[in-house]
Amino acid sequence: MNLVCSANHQSRSVGDLSKTCRVADCEAPVWSRGLCQFHDQRRRKGRDLTAPPRPKCVVAGKRLECSVPGCGRGRIAQGMCEAHYARNKRGVSLTSPLRASQKKQRTRRCAIPGCASPHYAQDLCCKHYARRKRHGDPLKTLTGLGYINEQGYRIVNGRPEHRAVMEAQIGRPLRAEESVHHRNGVRDDNRPENLELWSKSQPAGQRVEDKVAWAIELLRLYRPEALR
Image 1 (cartoon, rainbow, N blue to C red):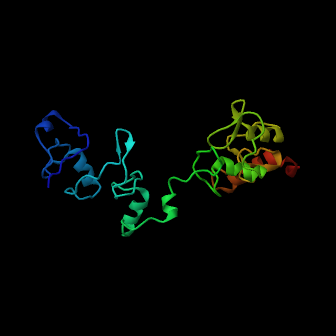
Image 2 (cartoon, rainbow, N blue to C red):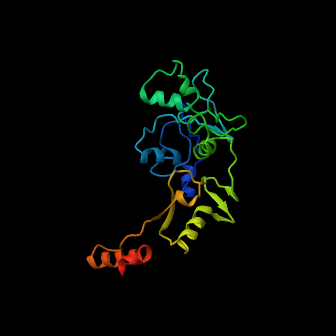
Image 3 (cartoon, rainbow, N blue to C red):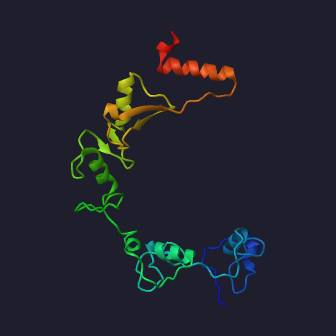
């Protein structure tokens, strides 16, 4: 077996440079316990030291193709694509044809013409799915000022619009432990009736005195009339 470590090895001291890994046919310098860095990592993970290195999935920033003949998809682990890697773990034959759903798993795109975003649900990407859920039409342009960030929230004047709407409703700035929840799950639907004020506040201790003080403070903030 001609096994040569392909990883970048580093030595801990100058003296180690004159020694090589104790694994047969490995000429890399010693890192720890007579092993190179690559084999020492395998030892700590309880893996077989004599097994050949796993095939690389990316070379020079470009993902390699699956090693299964005729596949053509990109590798994710052990030289195989996602579908064949899952088959290999289950012990299923790698040569039998893939189902249509497996072929589309990593290549399916939004059904809206001109949209290259990946599929999210019901043949639509996340953005067009949210538009159809809110407006009934995935092609309807979202109205309002600002822009939609990567998390799906509308940003106006540099801050989330849903927080500004809630602050206008309650007449004060939001506290650190408060958040705003969208009832229908559409993060850019900032109508007042679609927003709920949530709080993660809780008493600091478990003594009765602590809980009573916390309850009074909670009522003073949200239901002051209950203390009269």
